[in-house]
Image 1: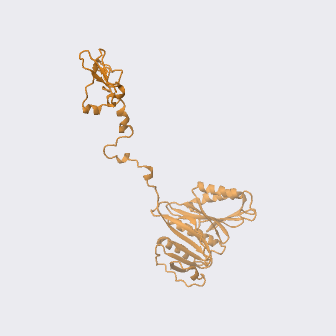
Image 2 (image 1 turned 180 degrees about the horizontal axis):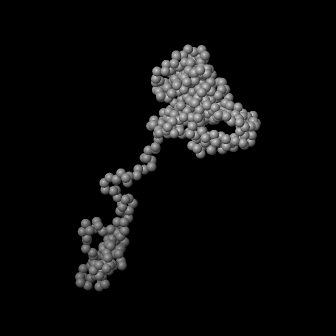
Image 3 (image 1 turned 135 degrees about the horizontal axis):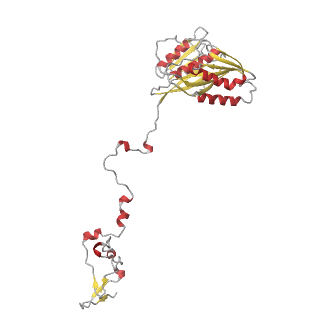
Length: 373
C-alpha cells in the first residue's frame, strides 16, 4: 500500500498521512467534551469527530499532542455518564436504619390475624345418652348440674362413665351395661370422654321437656364461650346417634356472652319459642307474630315456653300453603337485623327445632323461662 506524504512550506521533509479508514478509534473522541461556548469567548468546533490529523488553512499538518493517560480515562462521549450511572435505575440505599414508624413490610410477609381455637364434641346417642369429648372441667360440671336438676320427672342422671370410647363390637345397650355411679367430685381429664345415662328416653319421646333440655344444653355451652361449628355425621349402627355437634372456643378469653333459644314445630299447627333471653323476648315474639301473625289462632305463655297455634295446615304440614318459604326467609332476616343468627336445625323425635344464638348482657343470661320438666 502506498503512503501519502504531505509537504510543508517550512520543511521539505515529507510528513506521512494516515488515511481515514486507518485512523484508530481512540482519535475519534471529542478532545474537549462538554465545552461551554460562552466560557472565555471560545466556541465549540462544529466538527466534533475529526478524521485523521487536522490540516490548517496554510496547508500545514497539525498532529494533536498525546494527552495524559489520566485525562484519557476521563474523556468520554457526551451522554456516557448518564447512560451508565447506576442511579439511573436504582435509588441509593438510605443511610442508617429506617425508623419503625416508616417501615412497611411486604404484604406476603405480614402475618394473618388468626385466633387459635380448641374443639369439642357433644353427642346425643341412643335414647338417653349424653357424651362430651374435649370440654373443660367447668363446662362438664355445669352440664352435669343441668342434667341432674331434671330428677323427679323420670329424668336425671342414672349413671356416669369416663374414659376412652369402647369398641363398637364390645358395647352393650344402655339398658344392659353396668355403669359407675355418679361421682360429682371427680374432675374430667382434658380430652377424656364423659358419658351420662339419663332416666327415661328423652331423645326418643316426643315431649316438651326434651325440647327444653336440648335448648338448655346448647345455652349452657354457649355461656362457657363455646360456639357451635357444624354437625358431625358418625356411622355408628350399634349406637344410634340423634345429634353430634362440634363446638369451638378461642384460646384467648372473649368478653362477649351468648345464649341459645329455639323455635320448635311439634305439630303442623303449633309453634313454640323456648329459652329466649329476658331482654330479647319482646323482639323475638314480635318477629314470630309478624311472620305468622295472620295465621295465629291462639297463643299462651308458660314458665317454660311461649306457644302459638296456627290456622290451616301449618308450615310443615302435608300441604303447606304457598307463602310458607317466604315466611321462613323473612323471619330469619328479621332475626338477623336484631343480631340473632341461626345455628342449626335439629330434628329430635320427629320435632323440627331451629336453634338460634344471641348476645346477652353482662349482668346475666336470664331467660324468660326456667327449665321446669
